Amino acid sequence: MRWSALLVLLVLFAPAVAHADEIRCLSGGSQGQIHLSWKLPADGQRTSFVRYAGKTAWLRLTLLSEDSTEMAEGRPWQFDTVWEEHLDGKVIGHYAISTQGARIYGFDYTNARTGRQTAFSEDIGALTDTGCRWD
Image 1 (cartoon, helix red, strand yellow):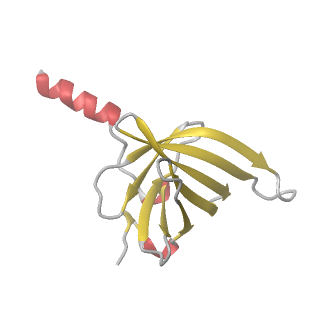
Image 2: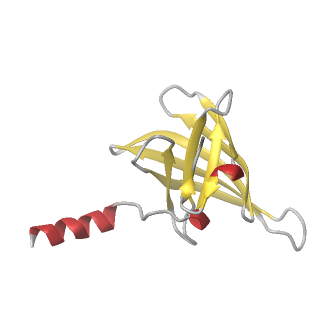
């Protein structure tokens, strides 16, 4: 009985395994040496997740704000969102993300403690059938 309760808790509180069509791969930093996977939020969801290369844990993101703009008639709208990054119950950073359709046009991280900013760009070449892979 204890094992089944533990399994239920793991399913409820762990992010689902991300499939390639549900994630985006990004690289950033001064020489593009920082890599992360972003699990796209499901429609209407106010949570998402990121995982840095070399790490096994996904960090939870919570939607803080969202704005939308019609860029051109008949084209996908641009969505500008700000997400809070959480670790151990504390906000440790913010992501400002701009998307239009399936494309990412801006993905910037700000460390909550230091204020240091890191710009990321989509790394389409790192996407595989099972997620992101950086050589």
